Amino acid sequence: MIDGTTNIIGVIGDPIEHSFSPIINNAAFEYLNLNYVYLPFHVLSENLGSAIGGANKLNIKGLNVTIPHKKNVLVTLNHLDPIAKEIGAVNTIKFENNEAIGYNTDGIGCLHALENKTSVTNKDILVVGAGGASRAICYQLAHSGINSLTVINRDLAKAEELTSNIKNTGILSDLNYDNMDNLILQAQQTDILINTTPLGMKGYPDQNPILHADEIPEDIIVNDIVYNPIETNLIKEAKEAGAKTVNGVKMLIYQAAEAIKIWTGKEAPKDIMENKLREILTTKIEEKKI
Ligand SMILES: NC(=O)c1ccc[n+]([C@@H]2O[C@H](COP(=O)([O-])OP(=O)(O)OC[C@H]3O[C@@H](n4cnc5c(N)ncnc54)[C@H](OP(=O)(O)O)[C@@H]3O)[C@@H](O)[C@H]2O)c1
Picture 1 (cartoon, rainbow, N blue to C red):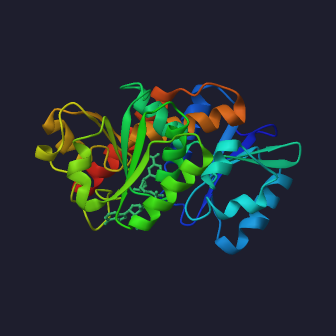
Picture 2 (cartoon, rainbow, N blue to C red; picture 1 turned 120 degrees about the horizontal axis):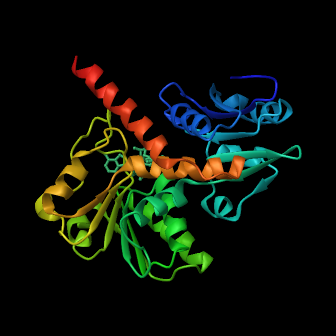
């Protein structure tokens, strides 16, 4: 029940109606019996600074930040967690002692999702895409004891920039980049392949998987961070090839769980959150069929 002592957490973005974060976070707060509520806030870019200042003054405890504010929000914050600073983007804010502290839980969310299936230590990892999610994942992996990281992107300059920025930090030396034409070849030489492009995402014009079953080695792990649909065409192809798979729902849940830990200090009920998300995603698909 919402009362005078309820703590408010929210998510800011533009648009925001599509966000699943209120559903999974409120399910977690309810299960943990915490007096917290999680709300969506539609914030336009021109109002970002005043929205952050206002949230602080309204004694809101924390926020998630989504597209298009993850980079631009940095200048409105008082402190940045070291990995958020490296990534140059924030997806979680905690308000404490009248100050706003920025974090990025996307990379650690992906890492924990992978660790469900395998350790990343000493692994060769291939990341397809060099956008915002890729940046967070690449920096986190570079900190996590992997052997090598290769980034493949349609715009080669972006892959080059990302890998050379990580190299300059000195956290990983074996960093490479390549263009999409060499994807099949690169996939043969990797232990873990992570798709961070929106190819295959519901509503995205191109539903083609980045690789087909006969191009995927059976001894690799394929992680598609696209979570809607739960089973993307890439995940289907990887299963057909006999490879192990990690779907995007896992990363979404683990990044949310890390944010809950930052705000409340509590371990989030990941199974409860995942079941709730699966229920919603499946219902939406069923509704569409009708
Ligand atoms: N599971 C999760 O928790 C989670 C979290 C964050 C994001 N995501 C998902 O990850 C995806 C990417 O998000 P983002 O924020 O990183 O997006 P973004 O910053 O816009 O980056 C998109 C990347 O995909 C590439 N790309 C786009 N269309 C392509 C195409 N037709 N062919 C080849 N490459 C293409 C882009 O290449 P160019 O550089 O050449 O344009 C870019 O590298 C979205 O589907 C999002 O929903 C999932």
